[in-house]
Image (tube, rainbow, N blue to C red):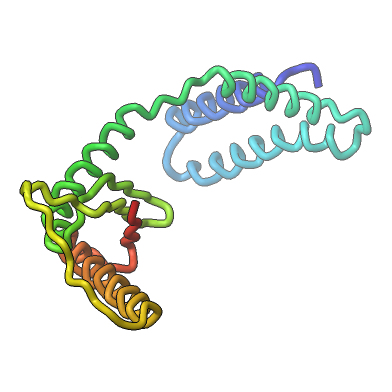
Length: 187
């Protein structure tokens, strides 16, 4: 087997072209199916020659050719530079649009959106929010409560969780998607 895999494929390709031209210039339609059958058998016979060399010969020349072809292919693939700049720009534009839609919803709960990340696999939207500082010039003091601090912390945690759940629902409504795909992270 003194020829490479590509030479083998070239030979079969040339044979198919010659066979089709022979079929085109043959005597008539009556013999067309017999000629096609004969061409199919001849093509199969050409494929059996390398297979016979692999199965009967212990030298494995075909395997050497396949490995050489694979190393050439891997070397060529190593030289390819994968550039996804356009795809990254589209993702950034999508994230900016989502951030603009969610900014007003977050403002209703006293938060501002710091950043939005959109992931494709698995699909999710991660929204980083932070407590928005009020810039009115006046200092407001919250109500001073006297009581059990542990109960207040529990109540505050429940209110905080409820607020996130409600905000997550509104985010889903604003984006026309299921809230299960939205993750809110406070920074």
